[in-house]
Length: 220
Image (cartoon, rainbow, N blue to C red; front, side, top):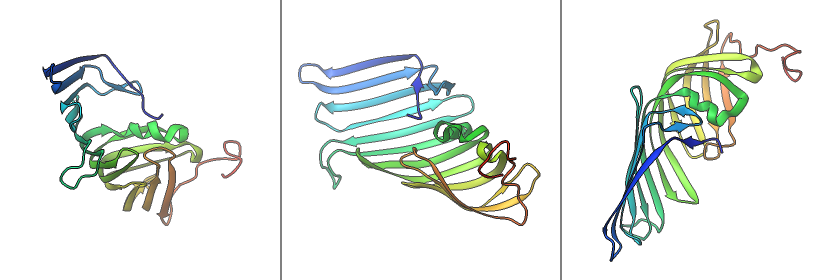
C-alpha cells in the first residue's frame, strides 16, 4: 500500500518455439518510471522461462543521471540443488537513491526528508514468508519528525537491514543546533509496513522535543 508504480511502458514477448511452448523471453521498458509520482528515470525488466513449467530468472534495472538499481532474481518452481519448491531469490544493488523514500513508508510522521543512500541486500524464501538481509549506507540524511517538531541529521552511517528491523549501532546524529547524540536501535517493520521506532539515544544535551502545549497536548 505504501508503494505506487506508474509510467508508460513498452513490452516485447518472444517465444522461441510457439508449438512446443519453449523459450519465453519478456522485455519491458519505461522511460519515465515513477514511484508514488516521483520520477526515477528509465527502467527495464528482462525475464526468461524455458517452458511454462520451468524456473523464472531475470533482471530489473533503473537508471537515471544520479542513481541506479540492479536486481537479479530467480523464482524456482521445482526442487533443484537443495532449493525448496517455489523458492524466490532476489539480489539488489541500490546506488544514490533519495532518502525521501522513507516518507513512502513512514506516512505523515516525517516530512522534508533529504539526503542519499545506497544499499546491497537480498530477499529470499518462499513467497508467503520472504526474508531480507543486507546493509544500507547513508551518505547524508535529514528529516523532520513532525510529532516532535524536531529535525535531525547525520552523515556517513551504516544501517543493517533484517527481517523485522533496520538498525544502527553507535550512530551519531545532530539536532538543528549541532548538538550530538549517540543512537542505537532503529525501526521495526513488518516487511516495510507497520513501522515502529525502537531507539535508544544518549547525549549530554540534545533537543529531541521542540513542541509546545498548543502543538501537542500529550507531550511538550
